[in-house]
Image 1 (cartoon, rainbow, N blue to C red):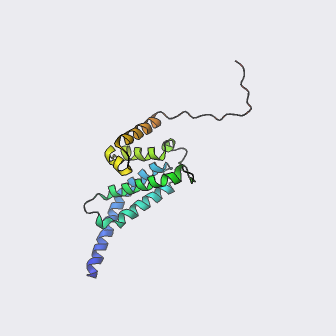
Image 2: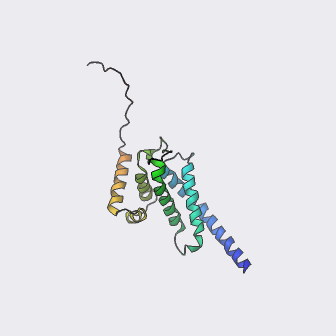
Image 3: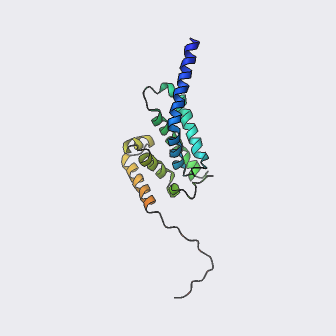
Length: 168
């Protein structure tokens, strides 16, 4: 009995290692897009990935034909969504997106919808169900985010107090 359990545990570990070898890079890239961090300096994205993989490993034996990548992506997205208020704009905010990230101009919700829809290819209906939003709302958020990226707001130049404008 003990040998059988050890064999099953070893097989489970090998299967999970193979999954991580194939999926971790893409999941890390998705997490980096969500956090809008630089690819070479992405501690929040790495933390999201670690938590998503730990959750996936914990329920590995209960997946029963479910796609482990889908499960890990769902956990990653929900973890980001639940922490976004505290990390990215709420009153407890201490960290901000990397200023040179193209996605830094988007809100966390816009980044989440955009990454799920365009980078991960998740259908509108699935994204809506995952985030608890109406399908129309997901479409509007995705369209707004895409428009913001294609037509970024103009960068304002700093104003100098006390400067006089020359008459024309």
